[in-house]
Every structure is written in C-alpha cells, then in structure tokens.
Length: 169
Image (tube, rainbow, N blue to C red; front, side):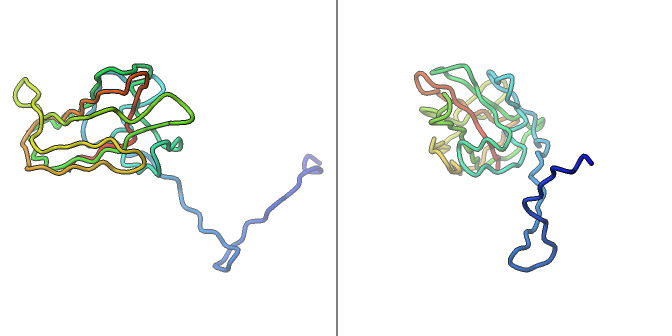
C-alpha cells in the first residue's frame, strides 16, 4: 500500500548493450604517507586532504576533500609534510584550490618551497612553484635530502587560498 504512488522513472539495465552503464565506486581518501601541519586550517577542511591521493578534476572541485587557510586573506601562510627521517626529494606537484565565482579563495600570488635543514628552513634551489588554476603545478629540481618540506605562500590581497592535493616525488 505504501508504494501506491511510487513512480519508477528509470529501470537499471544489466548487460553490455548501449543502455548499460558500468558502476564505479567513488574515490576514497587514502591516509597521507606523511604527517601534515599548517599555519592555519579552516575548521571545515582537513590537513588530510593534502596527500589523500584523490585527484582533482579542476581547481573548484567541490566533490573531494580540500585544505584552505580560510578566513585568512592576503597573508603569508604555509603547509608542510614531515618525513620523520631524512629523505631525498627531487620534485613536487601542487593542485591549488580556487573557487572563483563561488567564494573567496584564489590561487596564491606566489609560492616557494622550503626544506628543513637542522632547525632552519631554507629555499630549495631550482624549485619554481607556479600558481596556475585547473592543473598540476609541477617543479623538478636537483634532489635535496631533508626531514620535512614546507610550501610557503603569499595569499592574494583580499583573498584566501587552499590546496586540493600535494604530491612529493
């Protein structure tokens, strides 16, 4: 009786014909290989998003976890991965979050990569980090041995920023 007004608009199709659709499970976040920390993380976002392995489709991908510095605007901010022991690194890729048209996050005005040497942070020679939307910003450099990497960004005046994914090579 409860189904008296039930209307079925589409029936599932089993098979391999033109009407069939293959179901794929949505991507599940993976734990990051490295512990992450930041100068600030918005309470609705997650540091785990930095290295969860979920690839964005564009810079305003709202379907995946993200990390942002919201509501900080126009400031210098940072995120870092701690390796726990010395590790050779020869490249990184960053996919910036930018919700132009929907919010107040934009790609940073600039970014630089730092490596921890003892108790100090030093710029990584040859590491040029671009801040383009809708794609990976990849840089390769002569390998450095370090126990941690830090991305330091200058947020655009009047805007915040964030990261959808950060890969270390």
